[in-house]
Length: 222
Ligand code: PGA
Image (cartoon, rainbow, N blue to C red; front, side, top):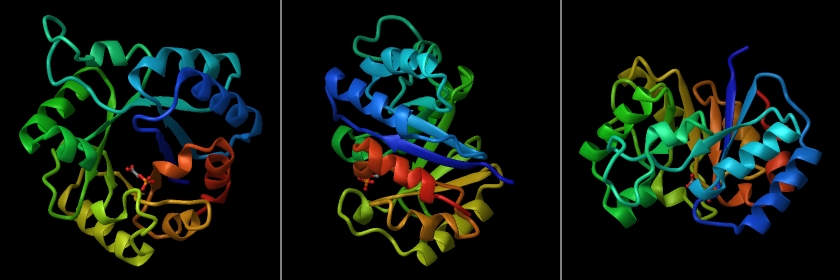
């Protein structure tokens, strides 16, 4: 069976006390599900500690970063490089509409970030806002995230998400996995996952509660 990806994007939420409580509750509740890859994406500063907890609990989940520097190591104050991220994480979210909107990230910059991720053996989860978003050819995991659905409680319809997923896969032969993101909840996750062209979900707000995120995982069945 094809693998499904369930990713938690915590964005700029949680202090260390909250992160450690989340991870402990989650890891005590979560039952491993075959063929599901669970990716936790905390802020950079918690990658190392969350990794330690994952190892301690021997948990079947991996880490993703929420961003990556387009630069090599060196005199780039404030940047976090692929080489540094790779010590803890396997994935990196690139091209989220919040970074395009709030930080002004451009298609050109995102291409450089994808190239850096690949150079350091990190798998980009590249966010596309619609079927016309420019996507670098090398990416294999794409998250279709319509801006109107992010954080609004107004998810796309599973049928439309599936249609866009199909269009993106047709345009991008290397796009093996297409995730849907935007107001995913434990109630609606099944309706997205059962669509033929959708291979997982990227979850923001609903991933902030460990029990809700566990329910999302357990309801994510093809
Ligand atoms: P949301 O965010 O689940 O809170 O809508 C999704 C995302 O931005 O990845």
